[in-house]
Image 1: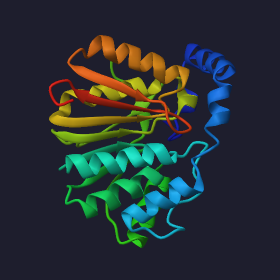
Image 2: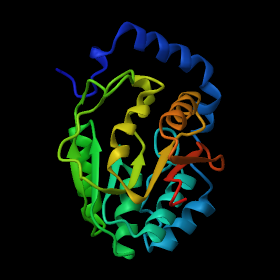
Image 3: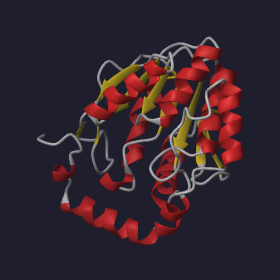
Image 4: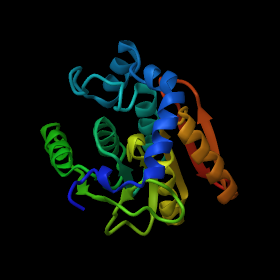
Length: 237
């Protein structure tokens, strides 16, 4: 594949469906430009002991404050021994800092952009934090999911927290559904956090997940600019 975003390799059907969803989901995209209030952002940074300028402007394609708060809550409660993140960025900083405060294990973060992955690792190092940042090119998705998906290598056998903030919807509105390929690796106490859960594409993804994974419970927190899906095994929830 000549380009790491893989856009040239998408099928004509994928492109048509992406354009169609883009036409109907513009209200959600417009709302996502707001990343949360300054008060919420300041409270999150103070809670984690980060400086006021630690986070860039949130919103748009970046995680919003509510999603980042869910991450901090999950790490504090679960004390995860392994965190896997799909799509790095502001969430990587919050995960790494939360793990440092609550005695958790490593963060393994995958992203399709090699330069951005390296830059995020350097950004974390500047805050005295570390993570296993991995470049995962896009390629053939698993199962019957459309679009393209991360070509993941050396995925841990047991995952306690799975944070899904990629791949981008521009590849296909249902692209993040392929994250279910990691569900068999979730530990008994594991939690899933899916960003952008209010978008039409993600709603269809969750509907399919509920059908395919009856042993899991999926709850939708509609607060925040984008919405967050929280998934857990029913026995743990």
